[in-house]
Length: 227
Image (cartoon, rainbow, N blue to C red; front, side, top):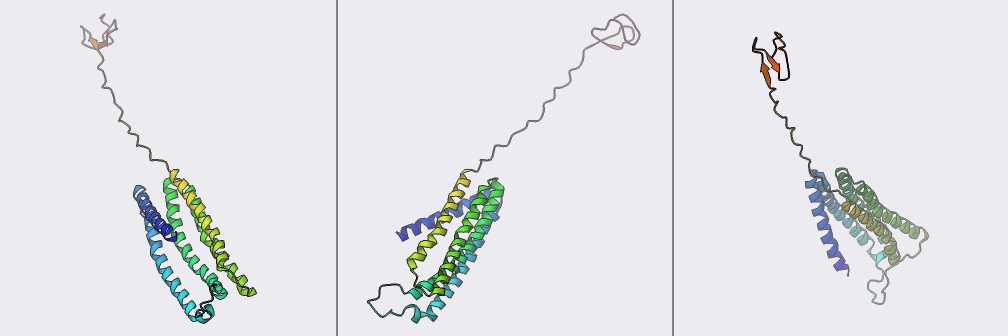
């Protein structure tokens, strides 16, 4: 099931990138898509660094984390491993924050261009997800380390779903914002005003002086001759 959801998530991510690329073309704002590309590159680098740090921590504490590795009777996850995992969770949560920051910048631009403020709201909720998970992991690890109690890895994973649910709500808001975009109205073609050619006024000329007079004139306006 995890593999199926992973494939669907990857396909959805590709469709998301295609949609944002289309928005960058429609609104003639390349940064809508460029911010996502910057975020992907920086996030990949951050994931590699976080993974190296995690591997080094595990290797230096291998004997403590896996005291019963050679024993086939132990099927439980050691509490020391759970505690270490709790401290490593904020590190990877920070990676999620880095990616989310670039997504927010992209959605903020899209909000300005599309005149849909719900994009900004959804982006803020999207950032709340990884921050909540980081706070949960730090508190969970701090309590376990301070009280020296054995913590359950499943309990920590269950608590981390809170941040994931918040991000799900954020994507629902962003989807609603997408359907709130108004189609651009067709440009109104303003036709140039048509001016009627001035109609030449008909006149009658005086037989005495030749001056032009209106048709209804009885006497010439120049010489007074009866027309």
